[in-house]
Length: 173
Length: 173
Figure 1 (spheres, helix red, strand yellow):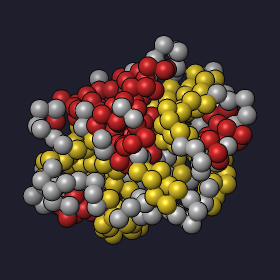
Figure 2 (cartoon, one colour):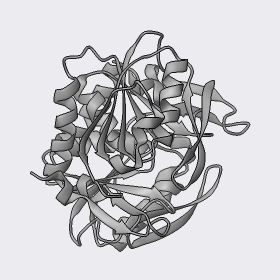
Figure 3 (cartoon, helix red, strand yellow):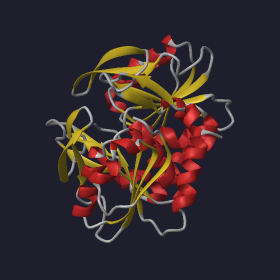
């Protein structure tokens, strides 16, 4: 199936000039949701991954399924103030403002193989901060995986040297 | 396995007098995470459920896996300002302040059988608002499912007449 057809596009949201790609319509489509998760599963299932790192909040949707299917742990990277124990933090510029992400210090052990999952890579600010967090914890970061990439926004430039996989892309942003 | 042993308890967080139940440690434990999701799956798999409604953000972790396993759509109920299309909203008091939840108007069709999923029910404010949202959309709400219930906080009183299922509970809060 063409996953892109299940993604809804909204012009001028959240600000004028931006086309927002709404993946809630993909999540609500059983075949599209299952296919997205299965593509990620088949890509990573034989790589000896220890943990899936999901980015708050849409990354939880795809990342949790991937962790479950692989029979490994799921690590949530969260917006500031949501995690109760000792955390490390990264502040970053994102497409429409700035924000801080956190992860529990003990969520990943040094050397563990991890894949970072989010729904979409645009300018790369969010995943850039997440890469810094997992690297600070000593993780062996195998790849960053997305359902959608907006290549014209060049998010990969924020994570030089890091492998990126995206199931689909929207060009001409 | 005893799932409760995989849940970390933090005293006096986020405010004095509260014991916070941290499910990130359960999510990071593969056996505990899989067992939690499987219990929900086996409970709902033969009930003809149309969609799983997950509450922002930890409800996405368990709700997305449940939707995937059941081969049905996943509907995210989100904090205000995150959904790009036409929404309905509910403002509610929660344990440590107040907040507004939203869902896309077209996310659930009238009469669809849904289960609401969150990680934890405490005072019930969040799930109370979510129940109002799905009822406004005309859903046939089968049950609200949680990994953890804190029965002493009497969250069920916020959703009278609605069935509640919790995998485990912590008493004496």
